[in-house]
Length: 128
Figure (cartoon, rainbow, N blue to C red):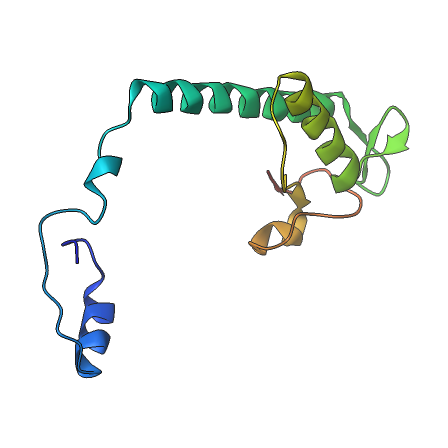
């Protein structure tokens, strides 16, 4: 076990009769350093993801709230699905493959398994 392993879990495992040895070495030492190829791939992936986020920000900036506080983009309600589609399209155009993009507004953003659905409101957080 690496030395960063949680102490509470360590004790529970020992209580169940497991013999555990704590090591200063990581489980996967090969992950300690990235290769040049890995750094290039990570940099490319980050730039593509930023393209999608930038598109989302641009759409949000161009949106206006109606009287009830719902966002409209081009006089059409802005939903999680519509914003996600715009972001995913930008990622595709940048050469990426979007998967499971999250655009969860308001209380939906509190659920880590919620991808987001329905209309977005002004003055509410949007988790992407």
